[in-house]
Image (cartoon, rainbow, N blue to C red):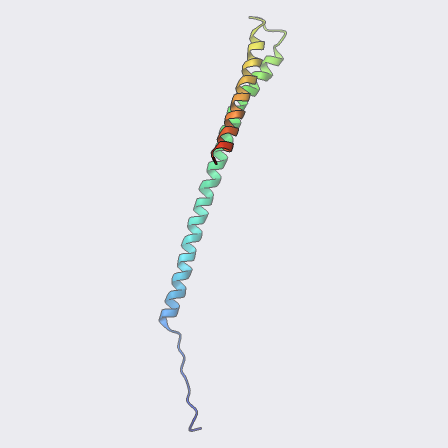
Length: 106
């Protein structure tokens, strides 16, 4: 076997360092992405709670106005005022939500 040469192939440290760097960069990007997703989810939930709280006020005005429409001991017009104020505030809040969502892309 005089013509046969053997090759000794050893993994290069450059290749190992490169793949290790890629893995570390990938893990860093995944951690940042997970953090951004968590922040976005918390922000969306917070905004939904605010919208629900803001819509609860006019809805409760309408409900209380209807409950005491014919039996208010102070003044007969207070339940009517509650109903009208609740309807007006509900329309205003719904329109302001749609205005923010629809016209921000223009």
